[in-house]
Amino acid sequence: MSALNTVKVEFQSHSANEAFARSCAACFAAQLDPTLEELGDLKTAVSEAVTNAVVHAYPAEIGRVLMKLRLLEGNVLEVTVKDWGCGIPDVEKAMEPLYTTGGEERSGMGFSIMACFMDKLHVRSVPGRGTSVVMRKKFSTRGKP
Amino acid sequence: MKITGSCREGVLTLRFHGELDHHVSREAMEALSERIDAFLPGSCVLDLRDLSFMDSSGIALILRAEKKMRELDGSLRISGVGEQPLRVLRAAGTDKRIPIESE
Ligand SMILES: Nc1ncnc2c1ncn2[C@@H]1O[C@H](COP(=O)(O)OP(=O)(O)OP(=O)(O)O)[C@@H](O)[C@H]1O
Ligand SMILES: [Mg+2]
Image (cartoon, rainbow over all chains, first blue to last red; front, side):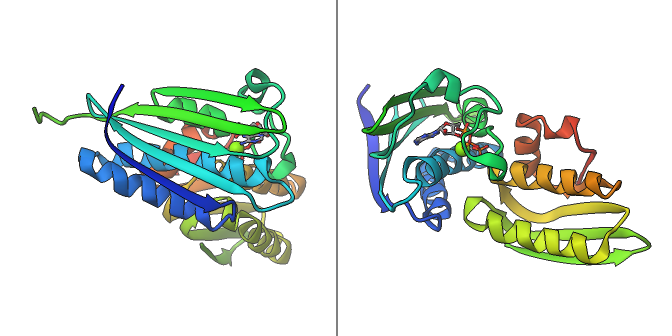
């Protein structure tokens, strides 16, 4: 599907950039005239994906994180969060609710929340090479044509 | 992120201000633990009316606070939750473990 508008932002995996990334996605989504609930859902899903890159992909170093935002036909927003970190050995297992390798500071609900708040969630990962999370959400048109 | 609190008649009320994500969660957990340890309350209320954003880092923090209160034979509840944090609490099923009063 060809995109109507795209933005790419690359940042370092500093935890301060979690807030930056979700605000940035929300700003891009403003052109869809979103409801507060839609904006909240988008910010939450982006925060989860970016936090995973910060916490899990680069546990002992600062690495690169790339966020791609694409506006697609039919009021659909696609967000890709990509890292070049440690990767996930078993993606299916990682996506199970409550599964975490993060100890008691994590709840193991990140992927479940992304799946719940977005319409589509796709995760590709190669151990040692990195992870890419692609999410799509269709925004309401609120009676506009 | 800021936590303010007051303790009255064994009830410790902790009010969260701002956004609760991974970036601030360790500091928030320390502030929360410190207050619980200082007052040893019979019950603790997390007042989330001024919390504008929370993700799964907040879920982990709330579950740890609940565990800490249980270890003190006390209880934890949540009050004043706004829309976005409430949706996250529901998506994570936290509302089934901890009593939540929304705004
Ligand atoms: N980008 C990533 N790179 C490497 N491993 C990852 C990545 N994202 C997720 N994982 C792995 O998948 C597991 C599950 O992720 P998920 O976001 O669901 O939960 P969590 O991050 O552990 O906890 P929470 O998101 O609730 O704080 C993580 O514990 C980690 O092992
Ligand atoms: Mg996570």
